[in-house]
Length: 239
Image (tube, rainbow, N blue to C red; front, top):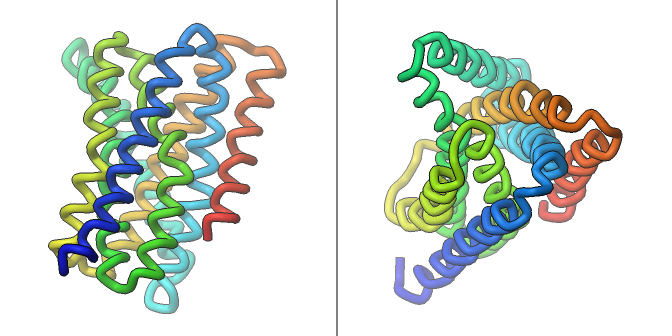
């Protein structure tokens, strides 16, 4: 890839990292309104799964992989994360310490793959690269918020900040790798579907119950519904 061609996706990677850090900073800054942030984050995570990851997996799978197979991968992601979460939770103190990093780690890996998607898309054509990059940028602020929110559920502010920094650089690292390597296209759809299952678990089984337990008022429920609606709008206009 020539230097000018390299600079554009790299710029998008920097923008994605900046958006991630901004979202995390907002979550840290307004942590006293944690219940609303939790409710919103739950809706956003579910919205990403419903309106971004699953449709994209179905589109990439195409005729080669049926919709039933893609939903099977979603179930694998959900069940796999559930087993890992419960296994670490029953492993005593050490397991609990690891479990608090599961959510932020999954979001960080997702951000890294988002960045890889940008790099790979620009390898195909600039037009596809722009479309993918804009789609990623639209939800990176939400990803930063979710990283901090998930960390603060079970960890201290310092741990949340560290995860935010790691996640903040993940898209840029993904872009760089995506421009120099070729990932088998057959793996992309199943990978997205598995991530959708993970996000469904995180949103429905972690964030939603915790937000309701912290504040059962209608405003928190409306924040969750608003997060889902927000991602529906964002993904609709980003495609």
